[in-house]
Image 1 (cartoon, rainbow, N blue to C red):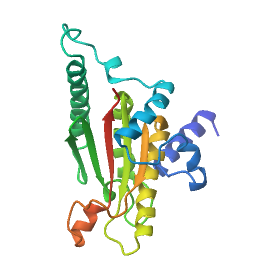
Image 2 (image 1 turned 180 degrees about the vertical axis):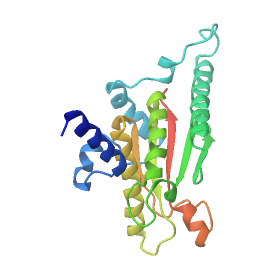
Image 3 (image 1 turned 90 degrees about the horizontal axis):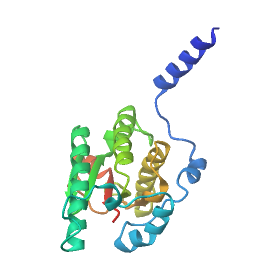
Image 4 (image 1 turned 90 degrees about the vertical axis):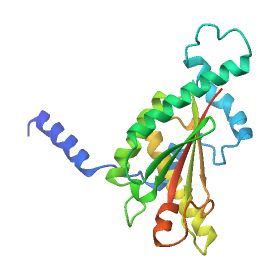
Length: 224
């Protein structure tokens, strides 16, 4: 077989096969450097030197200061830069993710992406779906461009009697998304990963509400 034809067929088959998470035994390699804790202010302060040591940048290192920004209150001027940076990020995500099961919200200076499980994973299997591959690829592309940020990936389930199993399932979702993002160029030094089980439900625990409560939330916070 002609070499060029072979390469073309290999690429074509890979594209048709779609994305598949790597073997769980290798996840530690992808998640080395990830913080498995809530993205609190204390945790962000502790992670900041690691982030900067990994060629991370502050928002103020990226955003061009307007004339006069060197005058007046330094904290207010920096806050204005941060708000502008995060507003741009919010609009980019909102435009890209106007699809069922996905939403973008603003929480102070942070931006929150809510991904209902069915929008990113197979219906009856713990694997990222074809739609999920496309959706997460768009998120990864935008997050690479807005890299002066920390990222918390939190998994949630619907109400379950076994709270230990709920936390395990929710952590699996969060880790699976984190692995995907690292494979698509997002640095581990930016990430916090947690599984919160059935905590913080967004809807009633009925048939339809359960679908909403099974989700992954990606919270993005500026590094300043």
